[in-house]
Amino acid sequence: MAYKMINARTETVDEKPSFRNLLTSKRCLIPADSFYEWKRDGKSKVPYRFILKSGQAFAFAGFWDSWLNPAGGIINTFTIITTTPNSLTEPVHNRMPVILSEDSERLWLDQGIRDKQFLKELLKPYPSELMESYEVSDIVNSTRNDDIRCIHRIN
Image (cartoon, rainbow, N blue to C red; front, top):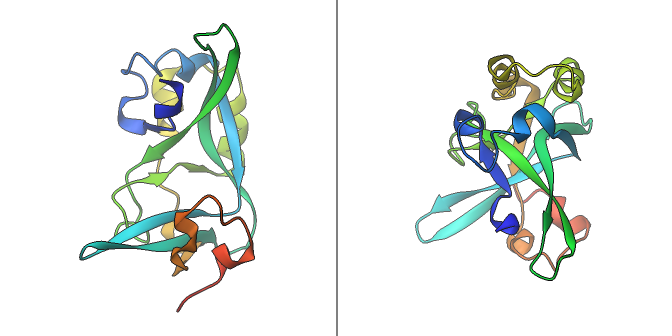
């Protein structure tokens, strides 16, 4: 079950049994320098890479948790929180990961903050004017391809 919860929707993080307790107790940051989304083009999907115009790394809002597998071993997991798309991601996909500003990162990690409504207000689309995107090769469709070709611009 743990592997099925890679994403959590902002709109329901305080309602879904899998996440509602994590909102006030197990928040984390997931560092990244980009993310990919796929745009439908007929029967195929075209991958796009999304980055910050500044070129800086950033952090997704997330949850962490630990699970017991059937054999009694501990499995540590994390979940990326998604939100509605900004104007840059919307033509490609109907969701985007929550990218937190530096100020919001500090608030998100502050375990003294337990107000669910306040926390949910941090989970908004990142400003599209601070981002850019471009098409990349479909080699990103396989986890076996983990090299520089995954970030090369197609157009």
